[in-house]
Image 1: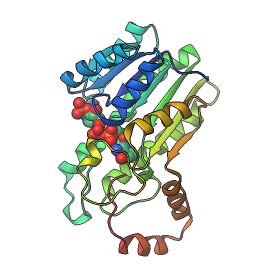
Image 2: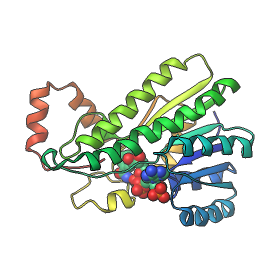
Image 3: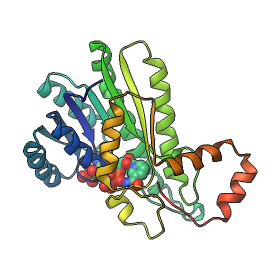
Length: 256
Ligand SMILES: NC(=O)c1ccc[n+]([C@@H]2O[C@H](COP(=O)([O-])OP(=O)(O)OC[C@H]3O[C@@H](n4cnc5c(N)ncnc54)[C@H](OP(=O)(O)O)[C@@H]3O)[C@@H](O)[C@H]2O)c1
């Protein structure tokens, strides 16, 4: 597969989404950029244009399903279709179980689960009708196994990964592909807040380059960096009691 000619990216105002928008701009794509902060999207639109892409700014809150639906519909109308939709918008944050509140949890689930599912489901009918398209969700290595102080974040990313796997199964013969992107630590405003050590942290430009290159091969999952991926995949095979003893005694690594 080649690079998409038309792509919609949520959470494009910052971090990974922003870097993905610039990568696709370099290949001359039409890039619809969704987020709440218009001033950041407007500034990015200039950069996308300078890099050779055609920008479309769509201000939307992904936790409002009607906003998301309108953004996807507007992008389809403006570009004459969408080859790829990347549900990347999300929020991070660590909290010990004893400090959890519903307010904290609801915000995270609304953005990371409801927002991502609203984005992808808004695009499915269009892609199925065309018989082609690529749906992408940015989940996390934190969804592979629960991490300390990350109950809601890990659960939100596990939910998204399971959703992506399920729609991949359902859409198998439709011509629509589905990829689950599971990053490790990437330098963005989200991780800039973290006070703990973040092993194998990647610069955001490297993450965006690797994601866009690997997406061309349409894999089911893109996970990086390999040392963390390997450790977490082995952890998935460990008996629960052993895993809980190991991570319960380790330094909290927090949000991936
Ligand atoms: N950085 C990492 O180490 C890492 C690792 C694994 C997975 N991830 C995942 O990668 C994705 C991007 O994270 P990032 O590190 O690039 O974080 P970031 O720099 O904080 O960017 C988050 C983006 O999501 C948007 N967003 C958040 N809530 C939104 C809402 N309700 N409606 C619309 N847009 C919303 C923000 O835009 P506005 O505020 O302008 O709306 C922003 O553009 C997230 O899903 C995150 O969980 C990140």
